[in-house]
Length: 177
Image (tube, rainbow, N blue to C red; front, top):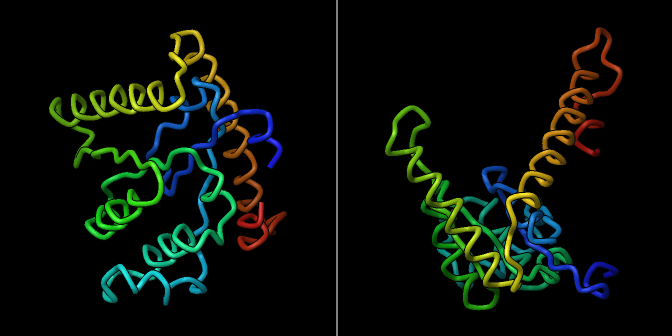
């Protein structure tokens, strides 16, 4: 992988709640990890309970078997507490890959939840800085935020193509992009 050869760290993530701007500000590239096939579920069930959802077992299985190149090359996996199954997956995953788990607040409407989210972002920043030996400057963080905001606007404009009548792209075509 060209990024690895150039010494650029990779941060893998499964969830959109992870603030990508933080590892980006440290010079890392954020990659979305594989988790959409049942190919590795049997291997995952050797460790994880069979009653976990297929998404979690697939995600874990791809990591455990190194069948997902993005997982294999990730220097850090950032997880989140969206459900108990994912928390268990990250616990097992930490045995073979560096993992940082962010605690998600249950609400966006109260001060305690906002304080928790701020603390979790600062904790992630510290974990990324320590892992990659690169202090994140305020300017680098602002630049990463500006870049991600441009990306989000472009993606929102792209998604509007599906709202045209007739749609310019089908839903399945949009997912391919």
